[in-house]
Image 1 (cartoon, rainbow, N blue to C red):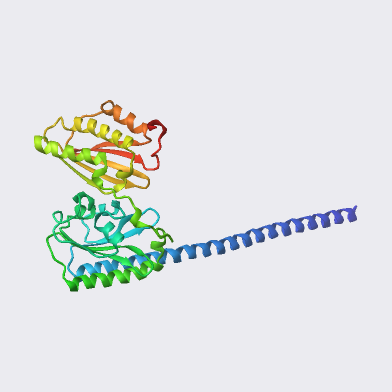
Image 2: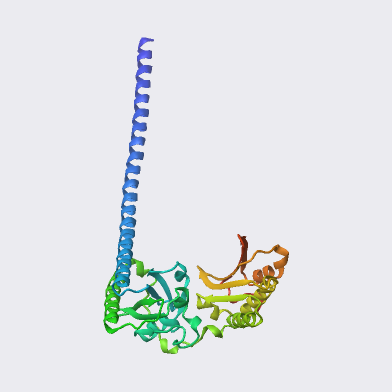
Length: 352
């Protein structure tokens, strides 16, 4: 009996020892795995941090050069636009002396406006008395409109391989930029091109693609029937002294919308203005811009009136049929109405 009890105790000790060994092995293995995962995560984080740090360094360096240029030539505004090779679009990204951040919403097509001309022709473009000495319609030059610039000089940001973008210096009064100032601006653009050539901040929009720019169809903002409608309304309200309508085209994609969709936008705007213009002194501002893949037609009226969904049933229905949506709200003594139209939805079967 004594031997049996000793054998049982020994067996229990062995079992407990095995269990402890398995437990300690499990804990060690788990911690080893966690250590490996931590090291992998730290490595990934270090890579991300290094990449982000490089981007921030380049961005700050570019901003410093833009601000230094602004101070050196006593400009009111200096802006840098990037050229997107893939979509043949130009976007203003960084600026010194901007009145607000609306310049970031501007999207220019190749060959349009001062930036489009610079990229297409790869040469310096001057404007000394905007809007009187520009070629074409003044609304083709949204950066000058948004920043209230009267005089500007814009140069390519380029190297021997490609054009990266446009550097623009502008004044909010009439000015002639002399040869020395132009030399300083061009020297800054060369320095920016060297940084952008190797920077992560530019790689997101850079593409190894050559465009035959001579074959691009020339279209103008006022080729858009929706823009034509806004121009007529603007003149009509002014002539009849029934308030005031101002509009700006920050994104030129409106030209590319099918005529059926633009007709829907016109009918929506007619209904909206009819409601707003019940008050003779209505002040209406309309902005055409882009947010991600949506074209935004934002209407802002300096008035307050009672309106419910029933007033805009037809607008909501028509907009929904082309895959769009509506946002409307009151704020203090103003009314905001935004039509969002997806740019990818050009071939909507309802319109066929």
